[in-house]
Image (cartoon, chains in turn red, brown):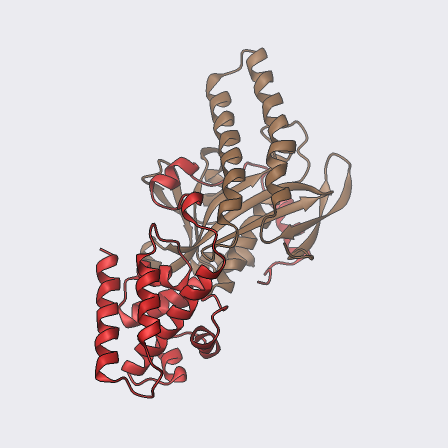
Length: 167
Length: 209
């Protein structure tokens, strides 16, 4: 990330600013009640969990792309995301997709965003159901150029599961 | 923790009367969270004791106590959100001491009509050290910590491809700052019982000019 301000800008602005309090933020208790946090004890500490989830997310995106007969470039253009990031999602289990990219893919494929965020490892769920289902899905998915009938059914069932989980 | 700060800026230390280098760190480290306890809290405690001793007004004491409690809770929460993709944290440091902190969630969605539903960066906490608050000390040390952190949030929003869109809940004493100086849109009091403000893409551009 790059800061978009210069020393000169900061100095000029500060010189003309009134000297007032600038604090912001709702109390944590309120944020918690609105579901902004998951209790730390639910986060778990197994290091390999995010990696497995990322792998499953990569397989899922690849299968959706194949279902719609899209190249990576075509999907990137349609979803208005970076093609290199898509490649990393599909091939690098260490890569963490940014929330904006997950949001774009979730809108394009019409998958509930909450489920997609969990699957991408950008959000922690209260239980492991999505991760476990995703791992089963990834393990059963083959990487052929076109989806077979069984793969298509498997993919559709998983999409249905994610939609139901989000209700 | 990165070895290098994200950026450095020089600001006038009004207590010493000289320019001092401030560094902006991302993410927040344990040492910044510790500063809440070790450096910020005693100043709040001292101020509260003074209000009490002088029979000062209860509302000010309660407001101050609430801010102090909020900081303490965030210090505990900082560790839990480290490494989360949907949270980013920033600390401003001078002379090895934390001067300001900010926690931002990158998974918010805009409410303002012209950008309704578009992704934005939500500032969940923006706090300045008590010695930088003009309402707490006779000569506050650094002016501009809030502006610097707000600029960091806008930079983050641009980095996340949110076009500079940000949102936040202002503390009552900071409402005019966000509305009148920063040019954010006031969307009224929401379910948090605080006033919610949003910055549009055009407002972010104007802020950075």
